Image 1: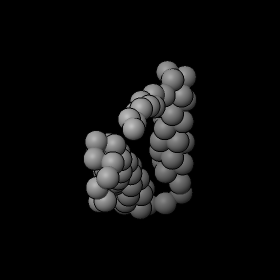
Image 2 (image 1 turned 30 degrees about the vertical axis):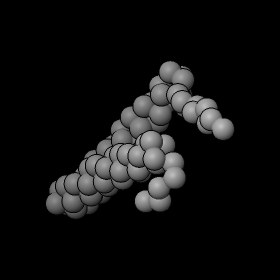
Image 3 (image 1 turned 45 degrees about the vertical axis):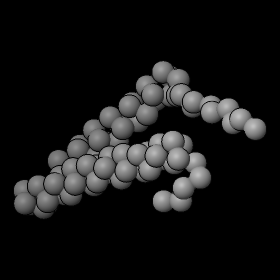
Length: 79
């Protein structure tokens, strides 16, 4: 019995929507932080926190993708 592998690929519209959504979220958060009536150090802390959260989310997404790709190459092994 042979297995047929299906390669899932997103459309360019889906990719564009994801990029646009990310840009809108980052711009809205940046504007919100700058318009916040607080001391400069509070706004700086929030800005650094947002950057840390974004980089952590990208790293987590990459790790999950890598594990999924590894499972597709070794479907009978458990990770």
